[in-house]
Image (tube, rainbow, N blue to C red; front, side, top):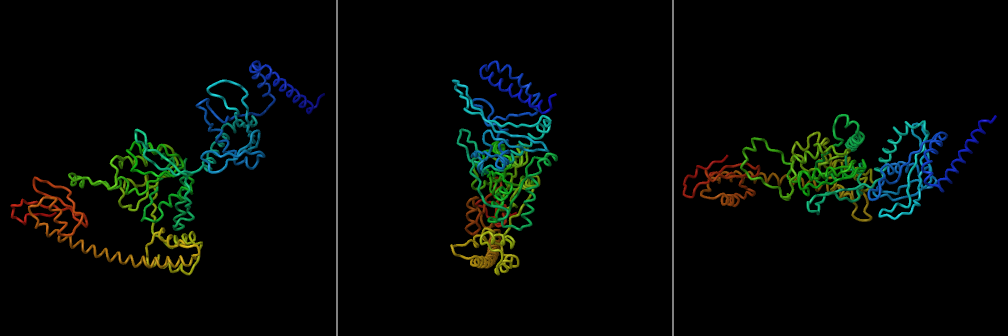
Amino acid sequence: MATMGQLWANTGSTLATLMFTYTIFRRWFPHVGDHLEPFFQRLFSRFYPYIQIKFHEYSGEHFKRSESKATSGIQSYLSKDSSLRAKKLKANTTKGSKSLVLSMDDREEITDEFESVTVWWQSKKVRNTRQSFSFYPAADEKRYYTLKFHRRDREVIIERYLDYVMKEGKMIKMKNRERKLYSNTPGQNHRNQTKWSHVTFEHPASFDTLAMEEKKKEEIKNDLVKFSKSKDYYKKIGKAWKRGYLLFGPPGTGKSTMIAAMANFLEYDVYDLELTTVMDNTQLRSLLIETSNKSIIVIEDIDCSLNLTGQRKKKKEEEEDGDEKKMKCEGEKKESKVTLSGLLNFIDGLWSACGGERIIVFTTNFVDKLDPALIRKGRMDKHIEMSYCGFEAFKVLAKNYLDVEESELFDEVKRLLEVEGIKMTPADVGENLLPKSEGEEGETCLKRLVEALKEEKEEAKRRVEEEVKRKIRREGKYERAKEELFCFKGMGPEELKQKLEEETALNYISICSKNPLNGILRLHLPPNNTKMNVVLFPSSSSKGDDASTS
């Protein structure tokens, strides 16, 4: 009686003989072999317990032929294990990747484990030996990956493992990609549409080098991490996966640097949106749709963009100024028709849900000028004040610029910044700390900063004194102008305006409305833009006390 070992040996020998016969038969009788192949496959599967899935490198035919997304994800996923386990590797430079991509060489095999299940990945290629004449010649080689696993693990592999591979591969590909800085430029086609152009994003800023209090930096970093991991949470509460940040503060306080640090921390792309080049709300929506996930959309100096940020007037004021001319902001482009409503819809309207994991950042030097509807919670969720340099921020800058963490001059700097309350931006502090020659030492730079802070203190005093003097002069001129308005008779509006400016030395007197029927002229007078009604008398009139002001 044959033993079990002999039985398996005989079975293996028989299968090998059948496979050899099948290979020879198919080579000499290819068409007959196509009909017999299903039979041999069923016979072979009875004794072979493994299942194979094939992933081709390309999908489609002819001009529609493109790289398979599945293969691209698999290659990215296997790259982390290939460099550690595979003995034969190949290195490629992939478009959009910031480094070499290592992958298995042809006919190389590695193993992977998932939920205690072992699988085998193999890279293969097949040469195309068929000769044909066609306008669409076939590729010389066809590459593909095969995944092999035991048939008892079919459910685990099909339902969970393949999704895991695709997600991990996508994450690895995003992490290794070359990040980009986009800007919108006017198009050159007949529709004059705008489009995104890009360069490689290489800004070196990070939260470690950002001049800000450590507690505040940690708060911002925690907020960013929480957002990036909250896809399911945003879906649960029914909100688009996006978040708005408003950065406000004086020029030179690091608003642009903060944006770069946020992008590097999250490894996001940056879209720098220039509203003045956008024709209308439709193009604004088109630009939004073209942005990618994992990106930061930036509108810098929003208070200077297309005069969109002035607070909406109350109904009563609109009725009073209904007859006044609308003053256009200097530099506004006439062809741009982007409205405040269009910008609000861009931020949190229906179109804002196209895509996900986006951050929208506004920067401004004057937060009080912004319309409350533009910066309310839900649009600009987190407001971050970028203030003048404090002592903690100074220590970060001293470490960055001079590699100095302790010095006798630190106490003096702390006194000037905190006790004296001297206001100096991080940009100015950094400029004073920057060595101006090859051999300049850190102590010299710190002394220069101390002197600059003292000079800033004296300059601040002079500015305050000068402002008080100007205010007194303005108030005196304003009162004089009100008294002398009764003296100008028989003049037209423009002549009166010119005479007022000459006699009172008040600039920027503007005619905001006039009614020729009753001879009423309305003026705006500085310093507080007070409205004044003046009755214009005919030149023959001798009644000088009929002029009225309000």
